[in-house]
Length: 327
Ligand code: SF4
Image (cartoon, rainbow, N blue to C red; front, top):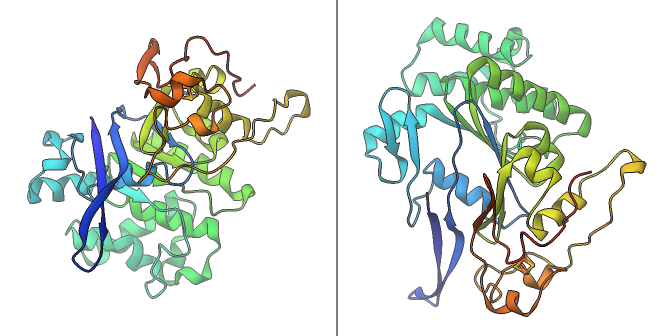
């Protein structure tokens, strides 16, 4: 709730603070139990910083991160004590983007997947082996491989190892940061299906970070779109994909690959890059790239409003524009 993460910009030997980057600026959303929230936007929009705050890998500048722990009840992760944080971290795990660099090449599968169990004193000796074998089996890898090193596995298999490791402590929430973007397209679907099966089986909640909207559409119940640190649109999957209310979402949707040529949409080219968050544009941050921008957009920052029940957008003209959806 109202999550903010600002980074100071320093200059010179004395590191004098000369400004700040609002990497995450007043972002609020809820992840219901057993559901998936997709967090989307281009690189540099604040998705990863937001997720790192949620896991308290970095301390947020302001805001609350309320985690409903199954034993301790609601805990504000942003202000959690060391003991609370230790507990919460057992229940929140992460799957990383790059299965090549996120696994220690000097550790066997047994050590990689078993490490959280040993470090958190959940299992010892033979128990660790049994639990690792069970986890490997569950993600579609043969337990006989547990004494091998990551280099012996393909990208897709390595991502399965990362998933097995994330599952080791029976978490409630998994933050998956672009988990399939480094994989071949043919392997992406298998990995997404595995994540979906695991969600049903273990009643997991996911925060799924991606820039590829087709992947998010496949997996998410609700979608949050971020632009230069701000939440610009949030809605249930169907509402967001078929009836977007923000021109940035429309442009992202237009870039999704469409295999059926009869369904090809008008090509909307997003000109330019995401603006420098240290020097964002005036008014609506999206106005330099928006094809609907008017004078008001350059002067006045749009507030995030509930334009339809459960559908939020930060655009002055959200109700008037007829934007193209995914079909
Ligand atoms: Fe585009 Fe204006 Fe809406 Fe911003 S407020 S998204 S510039 S139409």
